[in-house]
Length: 518
Image (tube, rainbow, N blue to C red; front, top):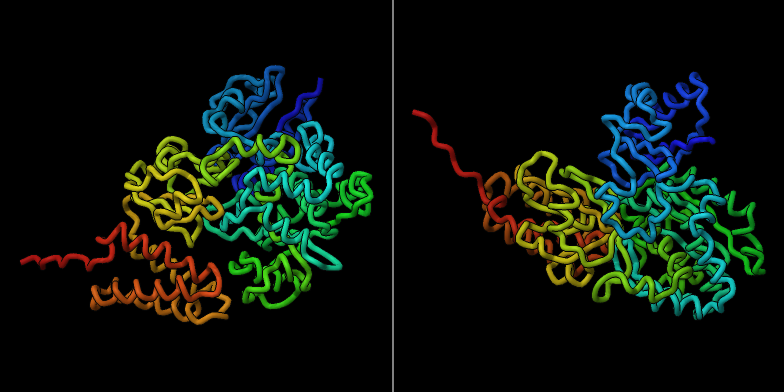
């Protein structure tokens, strides 16, 4: 019987030497005449254990990691093919605590299947949602997605069903589905993991969106920094097209939907939906004034659904298991699950999918295991470079859109970056302003000029120049940017700055003078 060994080809694993590990295993099993097939899967999201090598046994998969090419010979000698014991053996993959504690709905197949095997995808529940959708009227699909409580996972948290209903009811000769895969937030990688590890779930979600709204064409807009995701998505789309999942008659339904991948140049502002549309049309990536909304006049002035990768990838399970199944997870108005991406100074970095409602402190102290340095946690930034810094005093905040907003924070794309007590929060505030100054499209004055002035004011505070006056000026700049900017780049930059000033005031005071030695 042929044994399957799984070695990730996810970008995170590749960066840590997964290709070298795969080559070493391939060479050794060939030399020893072992009956083994190597499957290049996606990542399970346990990044501190990458490359994570798994072997299929009659009792389930057994994991080993982190594996280096130099470990391969000893692994094979220890009986890797049979799930044998070794210093790198982690036991059954599904029993690893970080993975066992998760509720995987959107990422159920990620790291489990061959990303480019449609048969594998079907065998693990794939396409059942789309099969259900083709037997339903468009409004019934929209209603199911609405009743599930699914909200935009890209950061805004806008109800997905309402957006779809608007496009369905909008008049237009042609309609589009645009997937915003321009994942630019620091500490985020969920979109990339889906595209590299389970691309068919995104294709299925987009096809359902097309059937629901009358759109016949879809675009995945991603960044040039994601070459592996781009290649995998392009291959998966071609496979789906050949299998009749995409094309003139989706799964033989007589209803058309096709799609393609488009690559941007990596501008952060193109994560904003109207700047993204400009870029997709071949124009400069600058923000459009609203109204009109993209749902009425979007891509090429046609009604357009713009959803994040995770929003669209969450649709198949809703269409398969029903709205009430999905809605039963979560809290308040935040329903379903959220893929939390843990990064920064932590012991256990990676992706943790769970129902909304987990306390921030539980995520940091128990799931992430605290800091990698062993020093106390000083601050946690949630929501990317525009997210607020939360001190330990706010670690009781549940992971919920409204709960974070009530404390002047935002979940955003659910990226978490952890800092220990050596972090200088004035420098972090300055970074936020500098980031905005660099990435601003320049269309509106509060963002373009406010961020540049913000850097200058932060430097004056650091130099001890009229610190009180300049702290007031920085706060005033933030207020102007928050309420005067055209889009979220300038509007949200004040969140990290104000939170740093509020929760870590000592970092904004002049350093005490050290008396000269006599």
